[in-house]
Image (cartoon, rainbow, N blue to C red):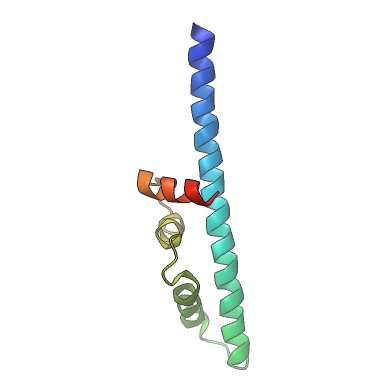
Length: 95
């Protein structure tokens, strides 16, 4: 009986770990798109220094737009690793 409980617990941990890794991967992919777009904005402006934050914010706005990943991305960027069930189910549907 104890093995069944332990196996059940392991599968819950594995499921949570997989979900967290998927979420982190999705946030990383979004960040990569933001970084690429910010670089494009920098290049378009003739590589003039001093506008990095402006470029980043504009790139985030353009890339995220109405994306369903926006809440997840912002939450992970803020350092809050607690993902609500709604965000988790949204990410589950994308995988």
